[in-house]
Image 1 (cartoon, one colour):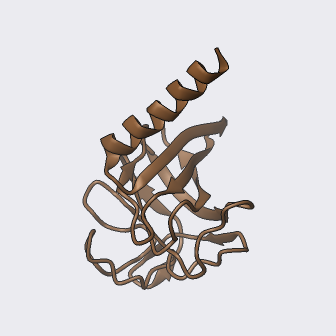
Image 2 (spheres, rainbow, N blue to C red):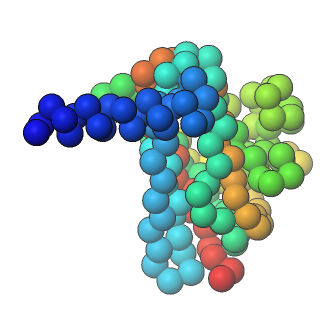
Length: 161
């Protein structure tokens, strides 16, 4: 029975990986709320050393994004100086990267993240840090993190719903 269960779990990872592209193993998502204050959590594991297939939030983030937190895995930390963008439905990175999706410049607040230390930043818009409104999903992109590496991205926001 245990072997069958393990086989089903492993097959689900294959199906998830195929659904999102070859470079993703897993991106679990959840949300924690305390009144209007919410934290959207995305736990990721990479397969491809260069890039991470775009993964949109499964729930809308309708509100004001105040902080984004990057926590590298304690057991499979990403490569040092890995990069992250969080793009809204118009393709604009709320972390301030100046390149378009797929041609990132890695110059925003999610660039050159440390492999051993948790990083926290505010959104970056036109060179200024501060809260930013989001209406809809955000799409997570990760780059240069190495294969079979992982971490968690937390998006802290005030809900307007």
